[in-house]
Structure formats: C-alpha cells, structure tokens
Amino acid sequence: MLNSSSRLGTTTDSDAGENQGLPTIVLVHGAWADSSSWEPVINELLHAGFPVRAVANPLRGVEHDTAYLASYLAAIEGPVVLVGHSYGGAVITNIDTSALDVQALVYVAAFIPIAGETVGQLAAQSSTPLPLVTVETPSGPEVHISPEGFRAAFAADVDQRTAGVLGIVQRPANVRAVAEPISREAFRTVPSYVLVTTADRAIDPEVQRMMARRTDAAVIEVEASHAVMVSRPSTVAGLVLQAATSAVTVR
Image 1 (cartoon, one colour):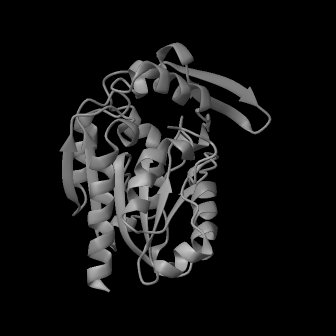
Image 2 (cartoon, one colour):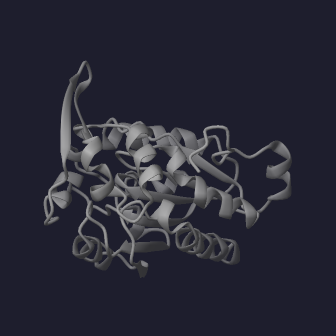
C-alpha cells in the first residue's frame, strides 16, 4: 500500500483501447492527502475494467484548483466520472460541467458547498477541532495536521504504520482552499452520489448528512474514518462503480 512505484491511476494506450466507451474515473484527493491515498481504490477500479486517473490536486485555492482540474479533464477523451474526497468535493462541485463531459459526481467523506459558501464555513460546523499547524510560506499561510494527531483526526481505523505513512506524505493546503467561496453547484446538473463516514473526526457526520440533503444525490453511510478510501476501499470503489456503470447505461 502507498507504493510510489504502483500505477496510481495511470493507464496505458492499450488500456485505453480496451476501455473504449467507458467513462474515465478521475479521483481528486483533498487536503492533508495525496494521490497515493487512492491506491487501494484504484486497484479495484482497474480490476473492474475502468480507466482511472488520480489528479495531484494543487491545494492552492478553490478557483485555482478548479481551473487546474478543468485543464486536466480537457485532455481526457470521452466522458468522465469525478470522485472527490474531503476538500476535493468542493473542487468537483465548482467544475463547469457544461464545458466538459462529466457524467457523474461521487463525494467520498467530502465537502459539498453551495454557491457562495466556503469550506471553512462548513468545517467550522464540526464539533471536534483538528490539530492543525500553520506554516508561513512565500505563497501564503499553509496548514497541515500535526504528525502526532494525524491518526486520531484523519485515519483512526487505519493500522498505525499505514496511518503514519499517510501523515508523513500529507500535503498542506493553502488557506485560500478553505477561505474562497465556490461559484458553481455541479451536483445540480449531473447525477451525484455521496458516501457519509459515520466515524469521521475530520468532517462531522452530521455536517456530511446536512450537505447531502441539499443535493438530490444517492447516499450511503459506512462506519469509517475520514481515510475511508484506505480503510474501506471496496465500499468506496463499489459506489464509484455504481456511478460509472449508471453513466454507461445512460449513454
């Protein structure tokens, strides 16, 4: 797990040929994670025969990260299914689906803001504060979870060694990521799916449920930490495949 030499969502030309007609599943990580956190889910999606990409979310701010994702998607031929974890949910919500062939959105323990709302406003509704550390950088303040508190806050149901690695490779987020309001609500225009994590200490489960109720999404719940893509990859992959298969059926 978390092996940097693994495929991490990169498909070959032959893979693309074999998967003609299937949507490409694009995984968007959130703050305090990186693309390697998707590895267990990627393995299951590839086994199911779908082309997969895992985006290195810049974590610079909602508008910046949305523009980056849009340019990434523009280079993919054919339909896509977007999957967002945590802050990645805000980014996929802010995408302009009219300009891209987005067939479905999947929110995994994710923020789902409405227009004009910030991730910070939603995060403030969680009852348990995160053990955050702020570092001043040339591009502005950046925030990460303290290594000592990472497992309890982010990955309580992940074994200690794996949680330790996740904490080591976590990527800090610029404060603009939580302070900038989103301007679009992509879940209004394409089918959406939500996975609520009921043992989550990073985004309160009640906050997740509240956000889900504001959409027309299909919702499932699982007893898992914020790092559900690592602790319960089959559950995450199952929901993603439901969305991807439905997209094929609709087309």
